[in-house]
Amino acid sequence: MNQSDRVIEKAIELADALNNSKKDKDPMEFAALLFECNLIIEEISNLNYGAICSKRETC
Amino acid sequence: MSDEEIEEIRRKKIQERLSELNDPKRKAREFAKAIVESPTYKNFIDANKEVQENQELQNLLREFQEKQLELQWKGFDQKILQELRDLQEKLNTNSTFQKFINSQNELVALLRKTNSIISQRIGQEFAQRRGGGCCG
Image (cartoon, rainbow over all chains, first blue to last red):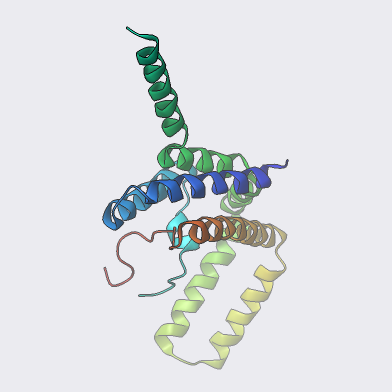
């Protein structure tokens, strides 16, 4: 497996963990969790993941 | 303590450990580390460093930005527009800049693919824009 495949594999694991967690949380709690996960990704990678991936280009 | 009680404790411990391993924040950290360790990310960081260290390219980029501003201030001006096109052409043929643009495009494509995978699974947009957009 190459390193880019590993990124995809880890994205799938994160997706599954979030999906499981969604069942036990109300929408506000889940939104806060998504926000925290985005922050963690940005802190470790030093990339603005939200801005890069967000579909919303403008307000 | 009975055998049943010991078994119950063991079951709870296994359950706790499984929840820990599947904690979304832990998974987010692992995901971010995988990004940082990927060649796509490393290529982008290296290309960015090369751009920063290339003085000639820095001058070209500065000149390009200044010309863009000049065009904004003065409005449509054929001469400035042509100068801007010439600078753009220089940037297009600069191998360091092109390497940077290509590595950036590859990284953005990879990150957007991951966001698409996660968003699809959870049934809502995963990527969160901070700060409430341009309107503050």
